[in-house]
Amino acid sequence: MEILQLHHVSLPTSDLERSRTFYREVLGLEEIARPPFPFPGAWFRLGDRELHLIAGERVDPQGGTGVEPSQLHFAIRVPSYRLALEHLRGLGYDEERAEGDPKRLVARPQAVTGYPQLYLVDPDLHLIEINAAHLDG
Image (cartoon, rainbow, N blue to C red):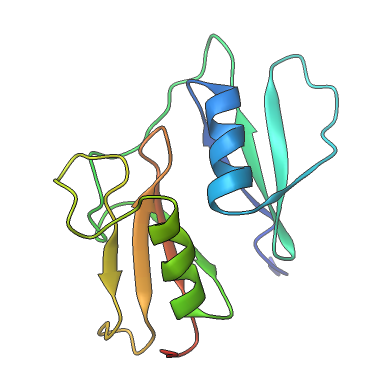
């Protein structure tokens, strides 16, 4: 089997409108057309891939318990670590917030990976890594 690329990531959500707002306003994703499935959801452009939110009665969000980088997560790459950090701080995300606070941010400018990383959670506690190719400013 030949795999060409990762096409999309699907996440269950307990509150579609709350998650829509998060992905539009916090991450700045563009919502895109979605087929008329028999259950609620929303699709977003995620670079050259897609993020699919799935809602409805039978959905079970499987987010974690906080901002712990060793947990299941997906990662997105941004052009500027500094601008991403400034954007998130401007929305109230902060490294000093208590464990369990939905706006807790983990910043690793000198990560062992060799590229800077930020971690935050969406409204259903799905962990998201934001990284850049290099540390800027």
